[in-house]
Amino acid sequence: MKRAYISIPISGEDYNSQRDHATAIASKLKKQGYDVVTPFDIVKSVTTPYNEAMGKCVAGLLECEMIYLCKGWRNSKGCSAELQVALVYGLEVMIE
Image (cartoon, rainbow, N blue to C red):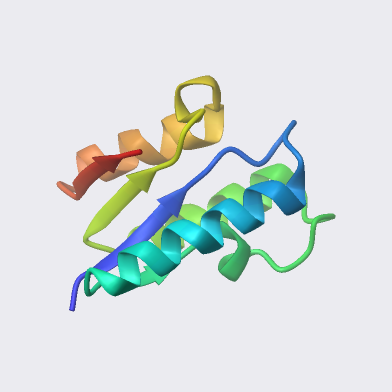
């Protein structure tokens, strides 16, 4: 089973709305046979410093074979960084 990482803008966005959106995308991908991980699975506290959260998320991404970029990713430094990591490591890329 392929493992997918959901890359979604969080900073500057409504946390609960983004979490709900990530959950909906995860459900869709699970129906397609993916094992899914989201930033919300990896970083449990909204007070985690940005650099620490990004480090944990990149580590989680590297355990996956695919990155799924959610809407708004182009305006997110974190999502853009995750995409670059995914490209360096040859992960499959899907875009919402």
